[in-house]
Image (cartoon, helix red, strand yellow):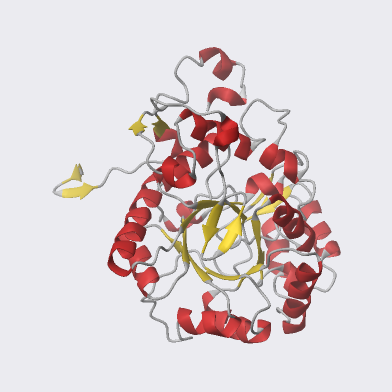
Length: 385
């Protein structure tokens, strides 16, 4: 604890650039590393979920990621479920000036969500042979579950900027997670949270997986607008402790998915080492050729009518999704071949599996991103991380 003045103390917390991984005493050939994971019975060859954000996930990009071994989450409150043909709407958003962007996004999201489009998008994903995960807001989750019905999806992801098991509201009843799971006959993932207690209570309430992260995303402004959030390394460690204690008490292991803030492969490696079972990423995948955002990305709460907590950013189109995730990389800054980087990092730490990587030694090392990199920094090279 650090004294911040007149008896008030604050806990020291850490983000990705504050820590580094220590190579193991035994190293492995990268081909021996297994990146697969199981999330509440869903087997993934890559421990990656695509964020439920409109610039990242549509039917096509979800099918591509599913074929690559990951899982995309379709936003049920988004444009895909408001417009039968969202193409012209995306054009309006991406062609708007910087000054107009938020107002345009607010305007187009006033169109109501349509039940028939929810059913249609789920069917289209099934027709493509993709794993199907969809995300409603907490206040619409029970209605969405009834619309979707039993056995149509692989996972229901109930997500908000912050979610707790003890939400108090005069407008709606907090969703019963076990009833949701029974309705859709699929696991229910819940997020987002950043603390041990909140994660533990969500697990006790019936969450089958918990999303961890408040405000770290590239297009999210929650931390600035609301002043809330915990750096992702500390958030992951705290919520992983809740997972482990819950497992010790109940025998049920509820995986945690670190959501947001990861830009390069090294960030993903640190996320797993800190305790995450998988990661959820947005902006790296918004830069894929298959992404619907056309080189742009915007936060999930950008459309909020009273207090937007997201912004539109330019991410540019980096290449095919396969190249971003699995290479070969044509950039030297760590933003391509993200899971090739994870594989090599795990091999360097002597970890054959993700669970072994969660035991890697971590050091507090804020000098690591810049130590010896003066020339790169002077030339503006991205490799300083």
